[in-house]
Image (cartoon, rainbow, N blue to C red; front, top):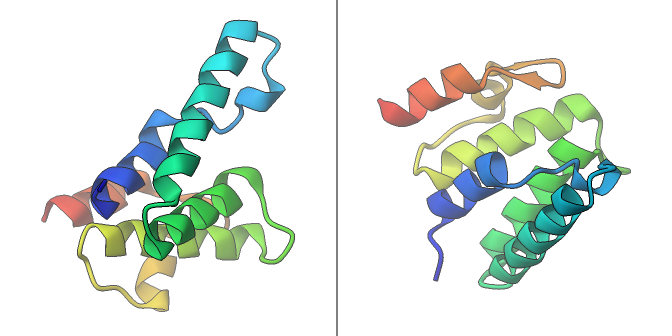
Length: 111
């Protein structure tokens, strides 16, 4: 089973979430292959599935939550996957509207 921290890193750093809009066929095929793999991993547990959903909401948008909310929810899940207990307010502190200070998130994970 893929650890949640490894999966969170894959969702954040490995996958090109914008591949579907690419004019480059090789980029599109690589993105499609990557998404298929990430969706397979999402089937490993309900936590994996939720991580995929939250990452997708952040990177692609959501019909149910605002972009700002999608950002802090994804940050909170990312931190949780790295065994950092966080509150809604703590997760929001890493966000500026729908933008995330990933440098600050990474520093929090390292410490």
